[in-house]
Length: 288
Image (tube, rainbow, N blue to C red; front, side, top):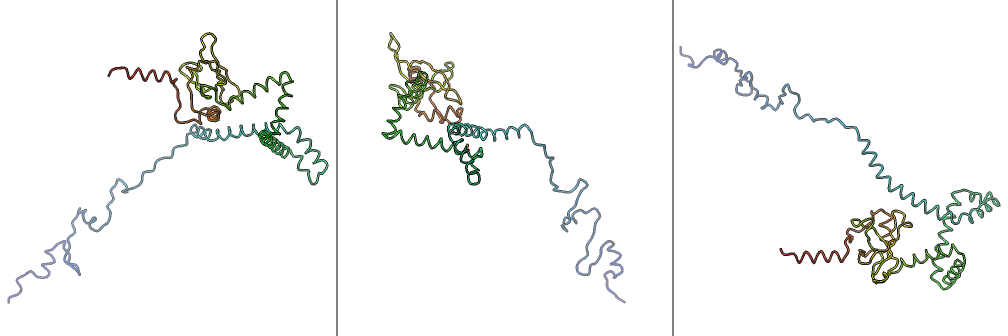
């Protein structure tokens, strides 16, 4: 009897070996050591070296105490200097009127302790003395622009001139302030002079222009203030041709001196104009 020429069902099962017939698809073959199966299924394969893509954690360094100290010092130093200057000015102005204001406030506080007892506090007396000084300065400035104030000022100056030492101090200070408010003849008010040697410059104020005896050469009396206190300094007599003029005003020069050079323009003249012009002319004459 003839049957099917193909293999039987049992022969087909034994012939396939590791093949398995799935209920929903063709047979699949699983091989040992085939690592591509894991990649096809999307399952990550981890080696023995650890997890893939783990972040690197760096140890935190302790802060440098020296840098922190310098940063804090540079931050607080301008604030401290501002407080020192403001405190000095306020105390100076309040001390002018305090001998007059303090007894008056103490009498008012003693006479009316319930209503005006707060006037006996030290900070109240200092604040009111400061206000009184500022008010007197503003009142003096307003009177100095009027005829009545100018008359009173002349009367006060005539009274001061009768006192030997006071007349010398007041007269010199008055002349210096008047000179700084006006421009001298033939030169700028704010100049640069060679001080302390020829390779360095210092800011000075020309107070007077004179002439050398015999030769007639122009000489300038230059006041060189110190930093940061411009009330002290040096007086030098310098030939006019050795002075470097500037276009600064007196206020700009004072700001430059008091700030120690921090408040300054971007460019300043350094060489004497005659020397600069001679050097430029010499460069033009040199053949190239």
